[in-house]
Length: 241
Image 1: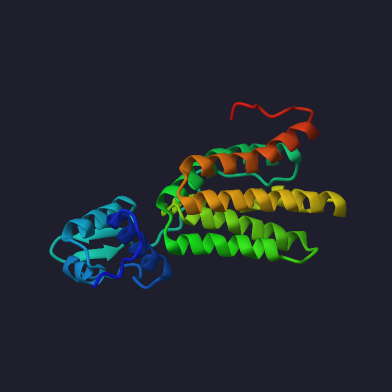
Image 2: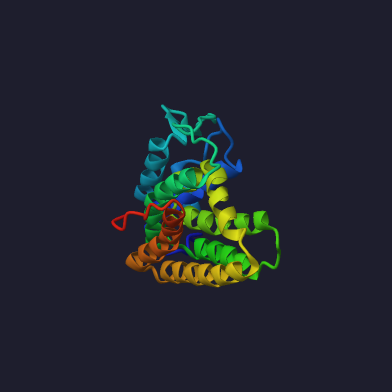
């Protein structure tokens, strides 16, 4: 019986599940993974699906084939992101990171809407509920919960580079979020209502699989900060983003 219950491309689902096993250490670095026949039986899919999934993993550098021996998990490498991101300590640098995020997260949310699985939707919903239910004056805790919502969306793309990117620029993103959460009580109350509404729109669009609406909701959510930063710098953000 197949263990796959989600909708979507079978090869993508198998690839994601094998990736999860590699990430968790279930398939350790240097270890041989089960044979194609065993994977076919376990997942309840054809050899063609398994072949496509393994090809994707080979292309991503997660596994390597050894002639006559099988497929093995690639030895882990510690490779930093290809460029360094300086410490974000002012409005201008926060604005620059946000412009970069806008491009990445619009694609991220679109892929999440197109590739969502029940498990991914549950993770995004949990992050949303956690943020909405927070009752604390600690801006760091609130900022981290906000970040986790965006990270859950990135994971829903089933492309590991999206969450890796967000985690790589987490400190810079955190600066932006702290600016939002450290406001006067009255201003913050207004902001919190608005951001919860924006997050709800994003979650709704992903849940419905509406790629266009998801892009629009994320765009509105992130561009609000760009506009606010532009006003603070007396440099209105470019409306054509």
